[in-house]
Amino acid sequence: MFWMTAFVDLTPEEFDRGVEFWQGVTGYALSPVRGEHDEFATLVPPDGDAHLRVQRLGDGPSRVHIDLHVTDPVAATDEAVALGATVVTRHPTYAVLMSPGGFEFCFERQPLSRPAPPADWGGGLRSVVDQVCLDVPEPAYETEFGFWRTLTGWEEHEIHAHPEFRRLIGPADRPLHLLVQRLEEQTGPVRAHFDLAASDQQTEVERHRALGASVAWFGDGWVVMTPPAGPAYCITGRSPGMRVLDAPAGR
Image (tube, rainbow, N blue to C red):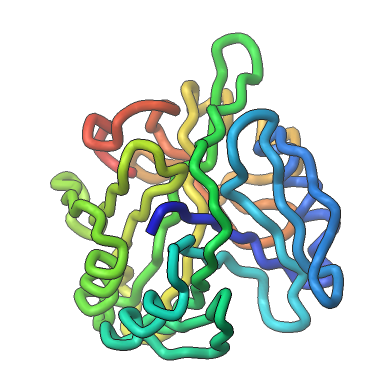
């Protein structure tokens, strides 16, 4: 796997407001829409390759999903199935699958390799979406974590202050890492949310409030935010560019 792209999947009613919000969060431009129903677009950074996209859903609640970029989607799909994934759609150039816990992801082979730098908002404030957190009900946690660890081949790191989290860290030239959270819930599918790193967490929170988001609650090193459209996300205490191994307690 040589790249990961994360999608914000939005209902038709939320799409325009959600896209506007995430453009404000990231500072990225919006590509022309594409797809059979003009349902896809890319958030395009000023420099580097894109790692965030948006999708207009036909139905269902807003959510997050990921695309894994691989050299051979057919071989990658076979490997994922052997690890416990289920195929939803299979094509020679891409595939849509469900993880063992029911999280949707895709394989594709678009070549991307140059991460975008964090956005610079002035006054020393910099931020970037650099992590996808998988939220896993407790009974499915070990199976789901093992699936993603083997599928990505990424290095596992525990967060000792918070044993409910484990991180999968890819090579330094990847734009996104994976955090896998064990929920107290006993049932339900795996889902995901975005985490941002910011050089000044409180200033970044206020910037997001000005864009229309609200604070849902404060965690230990992270702030859960409710956007004006789409799924919740977190602003963490990690500074952009910080090695995640050196991050403070929390996420």
